[in-house]
Length: 308
Image: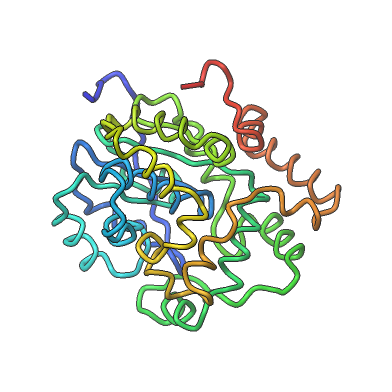
């Protein structure tokens, strides 16, 4: 891909710090022309997409550690003076992840970006499982290792509906803003080096979704290994074999990898949230994102002019 001087490429305009994130890492990241950047808000299919890309790049391999090969670049642990040399030393085609909005990272015209969207209510249910099952190692790392900015992460309330209400009313509490993350990536969807993928659409027809991703990334599929690749990207397979794909091998969660890779299902909120709760969420989505983006986030349906 060649960069066009006529395109207004995104520029980094701010830094973002909290108990998880140090956006300054991107200032020193040395891009390669074929880098792959996987972006999500969090709990929107990040680990799943890393597994999909790994499987297609490495023809169904199950021995390499995906979580170490594909680090979360803006996670503040390990610190950047440790992380960046490790990434720079990688010889394979790199595929890393970020949870930042566009204006808090450095954007390369020559890299390829995949942004995964998911209904915020489904994100929240997955996020609660992630948070509620964090163990002592997780809290110690996030709260006590040098570099934390802002308040420590506390254990969540036992009331998941209240957790949702706090997240909605306090703009992503206790993490970071959901709306600005989705909005910032949606706004650049027409750039030639970004692909929007929706969690539910990918789940509905994963083989077709994988081929679409491979085409976008110019990955040549080894057809003799295709069925294995698809199998290795199912939630059932990943849940049973997650030690090599889940961050830190699942060591920061009670129950390990089987907790981190939960169900991969949507709609669990329907039995808990009231009609008023959902109406408030849907109205907020339209207010924050606009009608088209809110519709895509809820359904996976892109406007015709934006469809790939």
